[in-house]
Length: 114
Length: 116
Image 1 (cartoon, one colour):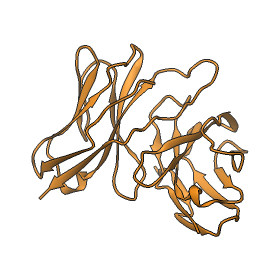
Image 2 (image 1 turned 90 degrees about the horizontal axis):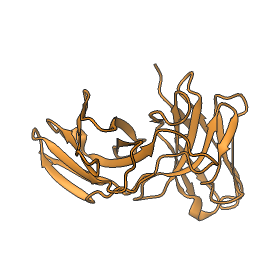
Image 3 (image 1 turned 45 degrees about the vertical axis):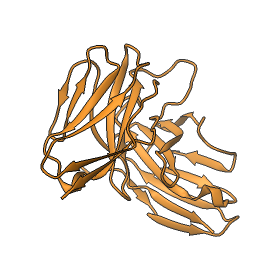
Image 4 (image 1 turned 180 degrees about the horizontal axis):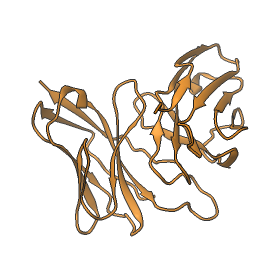
């Protein structure tokens, strides 16, 4: 079946703009994760959903970052008033049930803030 | 989740077996060893995972030492397309009580370069 998809694949934003990044998980996957990957680093956890419930947002770097998954499927990561340090690849992953199973990743959205 | 240590880079000749080591000396009894890889400009790709016993699938083999303090990922016949950053991750089997991060903890991984 189809894997995790993300859109847009690339996004250029001017400093101060708001951006919204979309993730479509694998159909039927209950758990969804967002990660941030800076250049040359490994991905870092941002937040975790089980269905529509956001169970862990301990990795969100500031209150400018907000994620939602209102119907328990598609998720959106929103970054308000973007800063240059927000430039990174944003990865989405999903897993079948409780979140401790294998995670499958999308291709990521590369965000560049000018 | 326990911390892992991997060499920053390795080379391997095409067609040979690539053996990627990982140290996880603080691993606890219910923690699994996972391996992912990330090819340039792509998202991480799951390879294999194990608890105590050695595991093999169509991509690789995972050898875990008896004391579980280290493991080796083996790509039996490396190809140029196996050039990637390989991440060794230790992860518990159940969610932590009282919250805490549920995501995978990636280090910097090993950059494996397959030479033609």
